[in-house]
Image 1: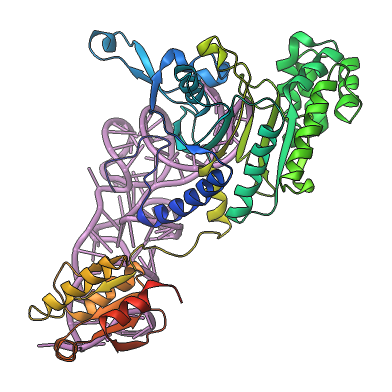
Image 2: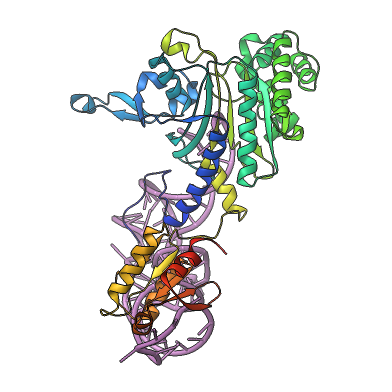
Amino acid sequence: MSKVHLAKGMRDLLPHQMIHRQRVISTIQEVFTRYGFEPMETPAMERIETLTGKYGDEGDKLIFKVLKRGAGEARGECDQALRYDLTVPLARVVAMNPGLPMPFKRSQIQPVWRADRPQRGRFREFYQCDVDTVGAPCGLADAECLAVFHDCMVALGFDRFVIRVNDRRLLAALAAAIGAADRELAMITAIDKLDKIGREGVNGELRKRDFSEAQIAALWGYLDGDPVPGAEEAEETLDEVIGLAHALGVSPERIRRDRTLARGLDYYTGPVFETELIGAGMGSVGGGGRYDGLIGMFSGRQIPAVGISLGLERLFVIMEERGMVPPSTTTTRVWVTVFSDETRDASLAAVTALRAAGIPAQISLTAGKLGKQIKAAHKRGVRFVVVIGPDERAADRLLLKDMHSGDQALLSLDEVIARTASDG
RNA sequence: GUGGGUGUAGCUCAGUUGGUUAGAGCGCCAGGUUGUGGCCCUGGAGGUCAUGGGUUCAAUUCCCAUCACUCACCCCA
């Protein structure tokens, strides 16, 4: 039993996991690039005042703070913190770089940190994959976000998912319509639980929050589809965004308008989105929305923005549970054995030629019986093994063994390169 | 922040109604086969039974605390 432990909620990513991760990340990045989002990164730490006051009370509590050095450390003072998401750092970047060409479209795939209690699909360090469009009004930019969501899920091999959409302004109008404009948040947190606790559960939550029976009855009328007074603009916006998303190739059945969708973060001002895998038994795997006020908090210039975030870790949990993880456990294509001291130079020449040809190859670093060396390749899942013994060297040939089929053949170096360069 | 569950070999888990040297499968290492992986056979390494305390003639087993992990709630990706 090892005496060392990981920090709570943190994980190591071993090679067999990284191979899958990198594949997933490049798939997502490829979709982002296809839509014209340019890559960007920001530091792990921000000044604490950049982060606080943007996410709501719950969010602020979960920010990982970093102690000051020196005397401030003893006093528990803190002036920096690990980033909580990728959206607020983006807003800071936009505020600090007024010369950016607008609209500014950027993608960002980096870890974020939250001081949450870990559970299934929730970690304290996790990767988010974000795209955001800054400086474009509501409409096509929002629709592109939905399309990116959609294309990413499809590219990753998910087919049963739904993107729920709503609008913060509609929720505000809803609260006003039932005479609870000052209690919008209490109403939202209650109805947001509909999926989990059902109608009666929501009613209980509302009563607990001092909503009257009349208000509750009126609320259900609106949630069931009655037009909400004062929400006309929000409804028109959603109509437009969803229509544009359809035109961008998102299947209609994968978008669902849902007046109970709230989203936790404070900074959203307009449409909000959330992607959910059907039958996964997990919260959302991605979310986003429009935040037209956030950048103004840093720069004084009001700049509209919209974006989405995909949570890698949750996708991985589901992919592992569903066996969607490709079996590959190595990035090495060819394992070159060393038969003896006399033939070592030939093996070195072979591995060097393979590498020069762009084929990932490694050579046995520890001496040992040929069987051990082949076993080493097998254990790692390497597909091809090259053997160069005295016979091969005399014939100026290499023995290439395909570990999948067990077939082996005497080939020239060029033939080995050709044979191992591609799959099949 | 709140409430459950679980800690025995690298992994998955047995086991002990409290009693001498704590087991299995898989994995790992070596050999059978000094030019060949997977299958088979043989052998080997690896455990302060999470940690600390208590009860007892005796604790891995019972009790308490701590720590770790895990699940759920809150909230969230």
